[in-house]
Image (cartoon, rainbow, N blue to C red; front, side):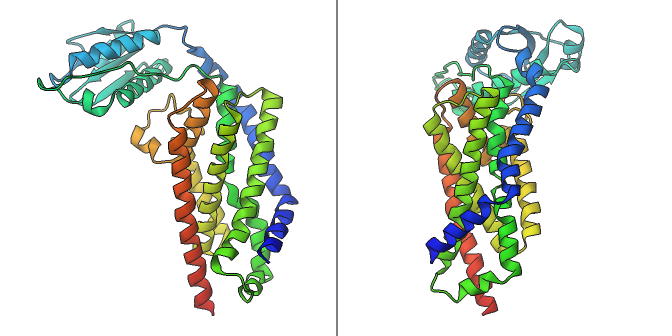
Length: 358
């Protein structure tokens, strides 16, 4: 019977115009709008323009070796620092011929941006953040005579076209709204009490859950792949290592489907589910780079790493421009953990609700 339910759900979901609009059409429209709107911003600093910044060191605990390594790494990215002592950061940005100013303290730093042009400051902040992340907190934040610091220049993501960036991450973002693809069918099912008929069948709780979960994954994955193909045909979006990118995309859809079904099983209300999922996905996308590019965003790295969308976005973007990414494994493991945890919670919530009505 589970095969019949899966087949029936797939048939109903594939006929839904809402699904076609949300998963296939909406990403293409948003890709066109955002890539056009931010093309100048992302192209303005393509690695050829020089950026000049001042800096000063507030604490003796900051290793000079770390500063030297940072300055060398910055020069490779056409970012040139000069030390400015005895001057306020805001005055330096306003009066000196520099694009930004960085103050280094014991184990922190603060970037002061030029209000007339904040992009160089964003680039510098991302560069320093990447340097700290790659060099390691242990080697950067300790200043002791008995510690030998081994610092390597951080590797930075090469320039990426806005059409490639948004052509990838918007498909991921809309894929995280997977539960909407089943909303009409689940509402009709509840209206005509189909769930009660399924309850008296021989299906167990996991089979009932999988009969909804598997069709949702299939429909959203197929829709995302169609949108992906259209992005290549219409906008010439470059997806790196297609098989690996598809694998990450499937894991992302599987995680979003499990998350949406969990919220639905807990709330037992599709309106609350859609609003709740959209709200959570919006915030996750905001910090994960779905709107403001994660390269230029000033959000703390700990906040970015807390959202699975960041891991998925970064792995796919880096695969596109570099052919490899250190975030592939974390994206797959994070999404896999969400699938397991959310599926278990969804099955438990559904079981408790059905028993409560028995």
